[in-house]
Figure 1 (tube, rainbow, N blue to C red):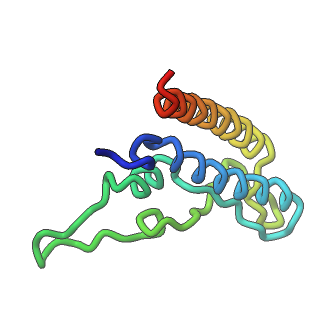
Figure 2: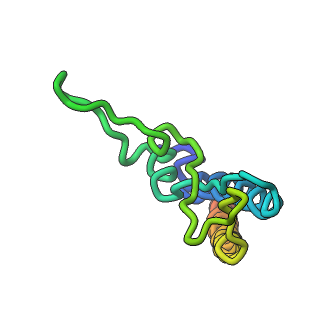
Length: 128
């Protein structure tokens, strides 16, 4: 028998990561005029794989390199600007707005899929 969390699949984890990413993107947009502010983001695919337990690296031999780095630890990464500003700010409004719009759309899609999954479970529980 599988648990309730297993029935929700990856969508619940994706929703949490999308919210985290939205918070980072809105912070970037809010600090677009702050000198020396560095735009941050997460690698959504890597974070989702890490959160779902897929893609984790293990060393099987003492001579292997240890897996690490900011992305492997779930930290926000700094975005490389296409054209950095003179004041050291790396926020590019067009990029941030596009990423925010795409992430919001994907958040809504994950939410809709999760709602359908829960509705299906409720129907099964009620025996309809």
